[in-house]
Amino acid sequence: MHAARRPPVTQRTQASRGRRQRALRHAPRPPPGQSERRRTLQRTPRRPLRAGPDADAATAGVHRLRLQPRARPGLAGDRAVSAHTLPLRAGIAVLRRLARSPDAPELVLRGGLMMRRWSGPVPRPVEDLDFLAGFPFDTRESVDRLERLLRDDTGDGFTFGALRSEVIWEETEFPGVRVHVETQLPGVQSPFELRIDLGFGDPMEPPPEWIDYESSDAVSAHVLACRAETLFAWKVHGLFERGKGRFRPKDLFDVYLLTRYAPLDAALLPPALRLAFDARGDSLALMERLVDNDFGRSPWSLEKWARYRASEPEGRPEQLADVVTAVAQALRPVWEVARALPPSRPEVARRVSTTR
Image (cartoon, rainbow, N blue to C red; front, side, top):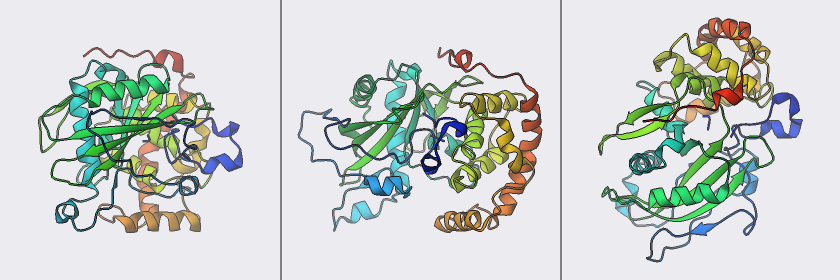
């Protein structure tokens, strides 16, 4: 979340294993004119969008905020706003509009905003907005739907301007559409670029449910969202889809948080886990190192964890081994039951009810 997902581990080349998961993470941007589109939601002219991470940085897996402030020195009001709160505030503003939209049943919330609900007292940064689309993959339709949604004025002071889109992982069975939106937050003079990722085709079992997403600055938004069990299964699979030793510390820590703070239904976890692996053609045997507590022991893994923890140490155990042990203990009984289940039928799991 995580966060279109990647092809099966067995079908990927070594060069592809270092790329981002779920088809929506740090994909290189195509040259202008190929798959990018610019649109304007408002009649008033807007300034050009600030460019995001370049292709070289994206290919190398450089981590940057998805909502990037446009440089404008001398604005004390802008400096007073924490960069970590900007994606969160903008994302919730989008949810308020989604709750009022006829497209609400077609966009299932997942990713960082859902992880934030299940991280307990531990700060869990939100970097972007992540949905699973219920309509067929289509770039134009995706952008059209978002334009209609963002044009709604809810009176909250947020305004959304130019859109720019690109196709992610188009060559896979699970492509995605990434949309960059020029966003003006109330009380912030400089506009920002919000990233919204739409994935397609990921089956869900258990099915999504309607929730009231609460925020401190406005009424709750009634939106369709993935279940904690589904996000948990996706996160576990994400630890293995790049190949041995290529896990992201963020994904491991998200699994750790979910096992401690999420309202997980123990009976629903094994089928969710089985489906997450079956849908990618991957075997649950990949998890054996983790459930045997033989995961993340290389010097490279220890260094990755140390760097990840240094960026925001609050709530993150100092020792990677402590995290792995806790996750392994929680996962083993789920894994053992999931292995004994018959193969999942992803085509059935995709047919979910979205009735409010």
